[in-house]
Length: 367
Image (cartoon, rainbow, N blue to C red; front, top):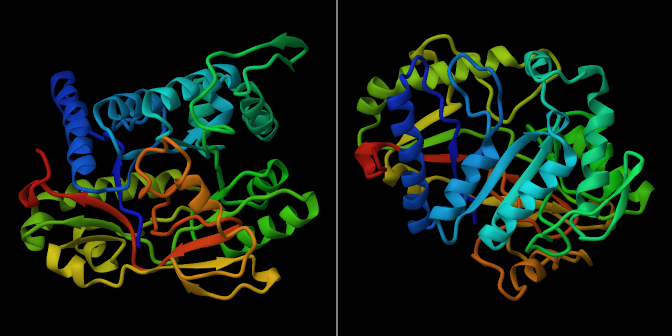
């Protein structure tokens, strides 16, 4: 079955503080609504200094959502790793993991906007080295034992809830990102449908002798919205959707790929393009929201529908993860992606026709 995702970036161009406050509080209410109606995860992002107020503090927002909900997961996709102190990031994630009972997924990305590095005084030339510190430092810090860090002995407490440690997928769109994931045995979370880096990750896993998997969006991942009247919804919300699409496209230089990227310049073009979709509940129900997976192709696994038996010796890892005592929301898969799919051991996860879901107010989403 597909993974359902509700995405928040809290963009509000020109909003006054009181309006922005109302928007943030409404987002938490919407997360509660999603929690009560079976949505799998809330997804949020990190960007700094954006003119339209794009959310800069996703872990703070995640804490508000996790504190107000009981089942739904929160995926931060992604934390811009080089902009964070690794020890403080480890502490923040550990506290949120304890608070939520293991419902936080933190994707470690490297970012692509030079303005963000300049704003926070981080040398962008060193971003690869700084990013490598996260998978080197965080899992060790989460053991609660003393370890060497930048020439000194440190120990972090408290230990997180999740064992062996909270999920820390490696995000990115390059071979360097795939190599980093394989080197440290982390899930690889490509930012788009990128078969080449995903295949490279598989090769490097074999080279390093580590275990991991790839969670890859489908080739045609849409941003899906539900409304009783799509025409009216496009008339009312189309300008807002276009603003996000144009902003995001302007941030992505050549060589940077994301799962949802639009070339539209008008609302009509955006609607025709199909990257952003507004459907009725019935149209959504009739859609082909089936997820497919490929597990360890070099070991002889074949394409099968998600949930079917697989000959991969590691295919039971998700079932073991979900069956752990005290694991909240057993029906919720681990690290979700924009496209639907489930994780079952080392493999590539893809979704066909699946995407990020939002409920427009006229369908019952909170205003």
